[in-house]
Image (cartoon, rainbow, N blue to C red; front, side, top):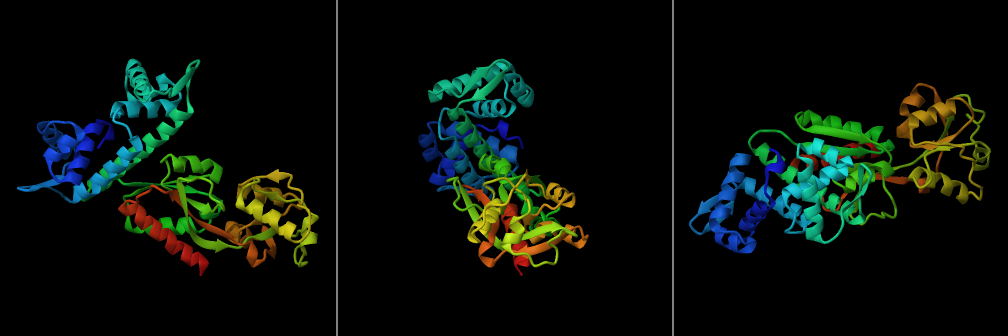
Length: 384
């Protein structure tokens, strides 16, 4: 079901029926007539193919579909947070922000350019703040517009989650999980969790988006991703995110096979004489690298090549005497193939936490909760 066919005012009425128990009370709460709410409810039930309420002599009781959808509607309306927002205005602003131009928004939505202009302008006037500014053929969102678009995306995510859960009650699997995968998670934990999950849920669509934390964090905050797996941050600077540790990882120093330090049991001072190739500053591995040499009273070794790609790091090391600091899980294939060798495992006080990051507002769907449980299962196997 297309969420753009929904009416936010009618959805607000449905949520009020669930909260207050009668159509009359809901009508007073949302300033609609009882017949209008009755018609809106009947249309929504027809669209989703299931009744949302049981009609009783003393009021309305939510069905299973109603119990699923009503909280999602409440959450979506909490993100919208204004009676001036209509579904057409929400859709127009999101399309404009995502495409960067009115022409692109028109192609994305199939709406006419005058309709998109009017929807965004009316929304800006109703909220009494500019949301976009023109830069030639392109559009740039203001700070208020960027924040509003993020809230609109999260509202859209809530409604899509509710509708997909309701569709599943009819045996129609439309559910989807989007996971951000940071480098370490791609080695073992995420593949194991995906394989276990899909063995039970082959019809759920899984999208894995690979990248660094810097590349994944905004898609996560904006609702494009449901969760992110990788090294946790301490402190966590984003107030709208939460972290859940899964296991501890203990990095090691690696070199190419045949490196002058191979088998020499090198000291920290020996390691410091060679250049390193590492992820950029601010990443947990880079922080661990710096703390390790500082703890041993040594200056940071040179890092002429910065990269978060294990493949790139491997190739740089194969062509010279570079060293790196990585998790053992990240170089399992390279070690088994005899391309790389471990020089020194860092002390236990240099472990880092690997885990899952989600939005604090996330209310996992049934399949999301199952996938999270599979992640925890895979993490326990890694830990053991």
